[in-house]
Image 1: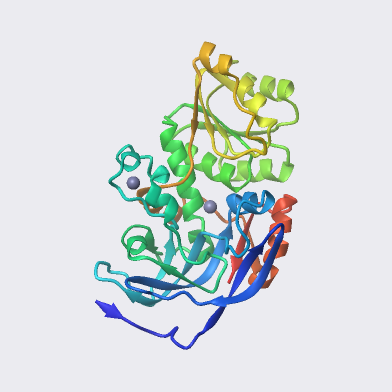
Image 2: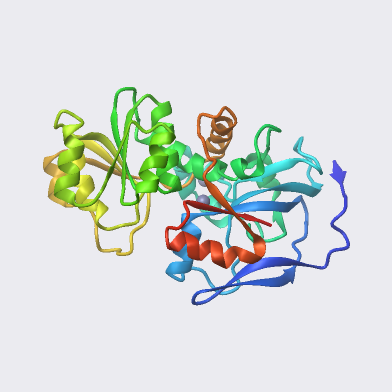
Length: 349
Ligand SMILES: [Zn+2]
Ligand SMILES: [Zn+2]
């Protein structure tokens, strides 16, 4: 099937282009085209992810990169032989697609698949239009139900990352789960762990985040002011045993000793954020003598995307805590995120 609609006359489009070391400039760039198969999506909006912030802060991307991957938009042109999607559909698109055949994929480490790492939307989410491949169309592009708003749908990818982490950690009914860091990722993890039947506590330094977590269904929240005090308080809420599972959703190095003092012997620590130092980690002997499991969880599979969209649609994951910025104000959104003035930015394109 070959459909071609609109989009034809546009020559250039607006994109937020990263320029090293620390600038984002709204510039005109060449429009992406469908060479063989795939689709062009007109971007309605894109969430600003913690990983975009890390890339900016630590200059991990070359100049010219268009960041952003939590996109929502409308298909304006499509050439595909294998999909029900059509021009006019409101969709979200996961940015990476695994091959489903390699050693990584066969062991469900989809986000480690080399195809997954190399595939991407072109040029990136902070842009008026972008290209998705046929492979994306077949696996990571989903039509958004009418009852789900653009902003809500933009949470599908981060929620899918969190959903996968909760599944990998094998969260069960009655488990004591502690979420460290109550930014948007921590808030999503906690809600999903609640959905899996766990008793969920959360800690953070900011009072408004502790309050919001309680509103979203956390059982208990507390200030992570210091390792000894905080872990003593947390343990008192778990009959002095500690957490079965700790999710590390804070980028602070201080959360490592806190995690070790809050986890129970034999428990699982899920590493879910990068920290500034590559050299810092969990103490070998604690892992050994206490039989701890330390696991990483990174990016979602296509199935996780589909499941998390469903959880958002059913209101099981509540995501109405984004602050909306116009495209021209993207730098402001980045600054406000860095200063912890907001929990999550959504950029309206
Ligand atoms: Zn993301
Ligand atoms: Zn693979």
